[in-house]
Length: 247
Image 1: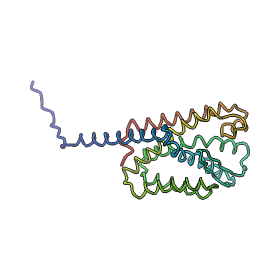
Image 2: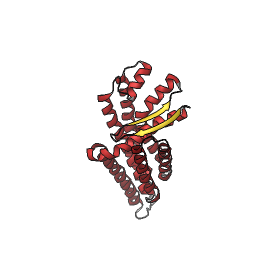
Image 3: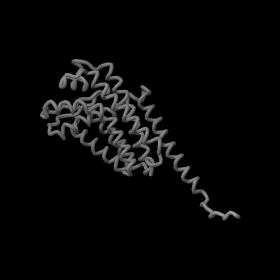
């Protein structure tokens, strides 16, 4: 019996190559942004300047939780050594104090997860940048020291350049770079916290320990666990299907 010929399948020239090219470009952008972020976090001369973006997100977390919990926000300060302080009138009771002590170190990895999830679900990078600008303006308004004001103005100028000068592809790459940076900075900051946290230091983990009676090291370990999860989940999203994050 003679076999019947199957249907002839035609493919337009360059169809597969085009998809491969997009995937290759996306992989290059994601890995390149990871490399840039790693340099910004782990090269001391760069971290001396880039750490303030991490501090801004950390303190913005404290400020937003204070406002959302009905407390009176007085000031956000960012210091030249990379530290920060958010001052507010405690009105949420022990639970409010606990939540506010936990949100600072969780804010950078949580923000990174939010950035990546937004891009993954089709939110334009321009919208992501606008949200960051809105938060930065809020922090600028309540900045309580001159250095903090200068830092926030610099951050706003950088975001404005991304918004008005960069195209959609560059904006998406910048957002991914910011996410990688916050993930890695979160790990670095928690590693430092392991060394310095303790009674009387005024750090967030010690504040949580005072409210709950649970040892400081447990809270630092909880911060670390969340930061590691954020890196894992973000890396899984970005590296498995990088083309889904670029316009």
